Length: 104
Length: 314
Image (cartoon, rainbow over all chains, first blue to last red; front, side):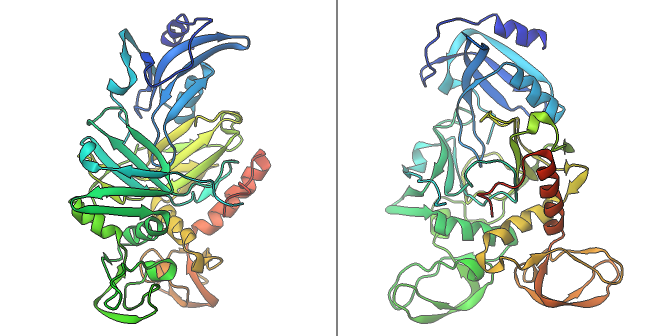
């Protein structure tokens, strides 16, 4: 796991509210080449381990929506496409609907 | 299984200055997932450019506010429009001269430009001056200054994306589409062209892969983007069911590809090999697309990998 991903996981909290449109984004996970993005609103500690929670934009074949993923998912996605994971931390959490969504 | 219910969307493009994109959903050409088959009309709409999309989903019908009225885009009109647009068949607004209803050409008539039309509302036949296909979607496009059927595109990611169906990271299956132009596109940026891929890890709804690539290889077999795009259209046309086959030239064995209208959508017996120019005949009228054979092999591999063809797919 990259240092950035490990740093992201330090944000984990045991109690975090379910994501909603008003949830502030604390970090953006991107794939370096494709620029595919996941807007992270929380990292949660659960019985089975950690979960990254947030919003992922859709494409023309799939609706955008909320996700709740094992942190290893992003490394798997990068490896499957020969890409790299980048994590951008937002010093001040930002409302989801003001963030740049680079998908079509 | 009946398709999932999709809601209705009412949208005023003037409220979404970041751009509105509307696509007709054509099913994937390769599907080893267990998800319901895609259908409906997919819409992206942003109030401001680059911001999160306010609408990002699929709908059964989309009501679009236009100056002085509104227009409806349904799956029934979107799918034939996409088929015609991909093949470059001229699409026009045609109304019945007897009852004034808008004329919609579907299935075979959606991809063969013709002059004589039969109105489904009043049952009258009428002649048009030009050979074309009727689809009321062009009214909406014209009203929103998006009249062109073909727009500039940007190439997808170069790739090649190499997929090994035995990769445990892709154990939830793979979906492949050809890129197809949006029916309606008011954003200032261009769409990507190539082969669109979704690939899943078993039990995870978020796709591991969700991108458009110029080159895609599955189990060492390279997919040709044009064959994928044409096959996607051929598969959407009920009258071509069972007629699209892999046909090798009997003399040089080169895979024959009917890559343009009319042959890409007209089953025929007589073929000319583009490699050795040999004229040959098939025993039954067919449309040649080498992808038919490629997909069969890839589904066999998928079976070995433990996924197999989606039972819900065509």
